[in-house]
Amino acid sequence: MGPGVRRSWNEQNGVTVKGSSYFNPDPDAETLYKAMKGIGTDEQAIIDVLTRRNNAQRQQIAKSFKNQYGKDLTETLKSELSGKFERLIIALMYPPYKFEAKELHDAMKGLGTKEGVIIEILASRTKAQLQEIMKAYEEEYGSNLEEDIKSDTSGYLERILVCLLQGSRDDVSGYVDPGLAVQDAQVRLLSVFEEYQKIANKSIEDSIRSETHGSLEEAMLTVVKCTKNIHSYFAERLYYSMKGAGTRDGTLIRNIVSRSEIDLNLIKCEFKKLYGQTLSSMIMVSGELIQWEALGITEFRPRHLDTSWSVNCQNELSISLQ
Image (cartoon, rainbow, N blue to C red; front, top):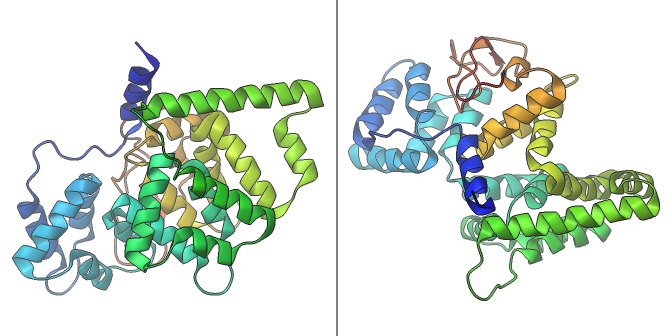
């Protein structure tokens, strides 16, 4: 089995949301309409439809909903749901690159810049993914992503982020297998890191920590972590989004939703390996008990509309992490 084939198999093995094999958007749209018609909302019906369909199928459901009932599905969901449950369901409805463009836009709008969100997305996405995100950003907000980042960041951090974006625009003549190209780049960087450790007698990460701080340190470490093991990086992001007082819901939702059709099962494996517990067992937040059969994490079921949520972690879906 060649490296390209192996990579393709691994990525398919990592997908937790694969969609329905026998898919018809019209009955799904009708189910959602009935779930939100009249007094009260059948949240479980919404979950049963949207979390068992992949993103492309959700877009078809939205079109069918509009054709049948003359309403925008996402806006209807917003009007019927609330709190963190609403935030999760709306994230599922965004086309992937538009969702990431929105996350970047939200990170830069208003007072203060959420540099961690920008670093996470730009350092962890492939060249092809960044190109699509930049295109979606301009289409949605009529603005250039690179220029907006330049106006919201400064110094070496700005230079690193701009370099990551500019790398996404490099033209390559002829056909290049993207999987092999990524692997080749990773091998080269890993060799550089190993050689550095031999010369400096300390790891590249230790050098970054001793010489930098703040967002610049985070950006440089993220590039290294994503090069060495991107699944471990996302496992760490998810872990620290839940560790300590309060939960950083944006980080939790963004990473689960954005990786669910890419490599979430592989991230779950790394999570168990690194932290000695399943990802589902840690998705616990104070408040109403929720079961959500979503994205191959565990089972969530909202009992009523509430801004608080927690998780019943009895069942692990998809690939076993034992």
